[in-house]
Length: 70
Image 1 (tube, rainbow, N blue to C red):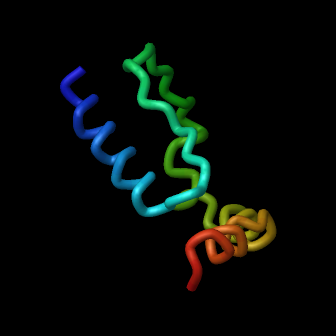
Image 2: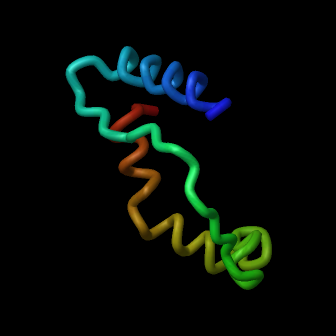
């Protein structure tokens, strides 16, 4: 509850930055959190080659450039 005002302010700022574009990320109350298993923690640091291949071929970088520009 203490973070809701900051989250809503951030949401308003994001909407102002992207006028006329859909913004659908909801602000929700906190729910039960399940941490990932140890094998998933720090994956990029522990598996730099696998993570590098993933980021190179998943298309994320191209999509970020498409959305946000260079």
